[in-house]
Length: 115
Image (tube, rainbow, N blue to C red; front, side, top):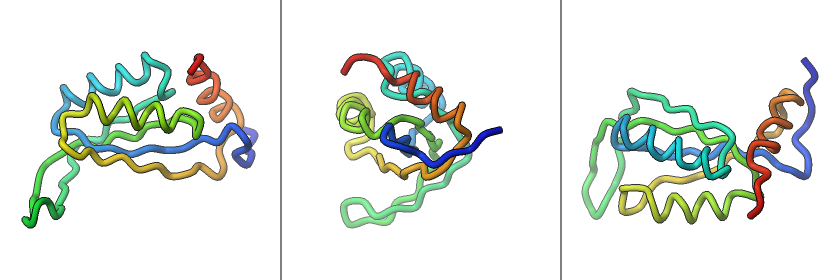
């Protein structure tokens, strides 16, 4: 398996949380269908402890791992802002520095729709 540094078509791993499986599947399906992401992994069993409006909250959530490109970041961020059920959804991105060449190419090709 060939590996390479990420290049100009930079791949990012975006993370967001969901309140339940139904919402996670719905949003994941929609952002992949809109070519805003190549893939969304949904990880159950996340317990989040966070400060919100002066209180410490604790919730069971699911974590979404979203594979996309830097070029799609703004469109993804805007879409999540409009469609996510949370008042202030978590959405952060981590740059992918290295990866399997074929996988990185697949991510780029999967989100290469016209923006």
